[in-house]
Structures are given as structure tokens and as C-alpha cells.
Length: 69
Image (cartoon, rainbow, N blue to C red; front, top):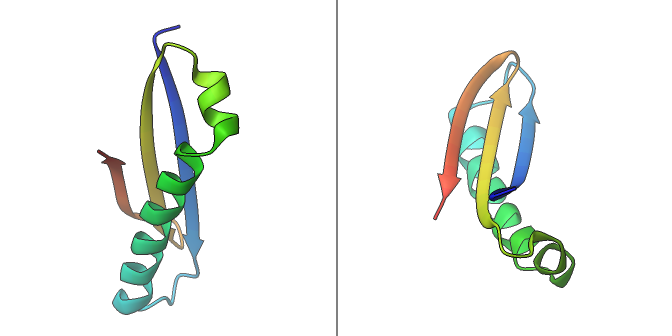
């Protein structure tokens, strides 16, 4: 196995505003970075390449999906 992933998923109600989406995106990015820095993750990824991703949904629409560098 060459790659490992930490993925944060956020779901907002369909009526969520753009401001709520922006807040959720910021939270998701911060959370995925915190998760990736934990000792538990570092112990399990061994020599793989770690990818940090987040996905935010508003209702059924995916409004954000990014890899964090």
C-alpha cells in the first residue's frame, strides 16, 4: 500500500446559507489537519503517503471537496 487517507465529511441541511458553508469548510480543513497530526495516525501510516481530504455537502449537493496540502 502506497497511500493513506484522512477524510473529513461534513453535512449541512439543504437550507444552509453560503456563510454556513464557508464556516463548515474552514472547520473541515482544520479538523482534517488535526486528525492527520495525531500520534495514532502517524503510527498507522508507516511509510505511505498521507493524503488529507475534506468533503462538504449541503443537502444532496457536494459544495466543497479538496485535498489539503
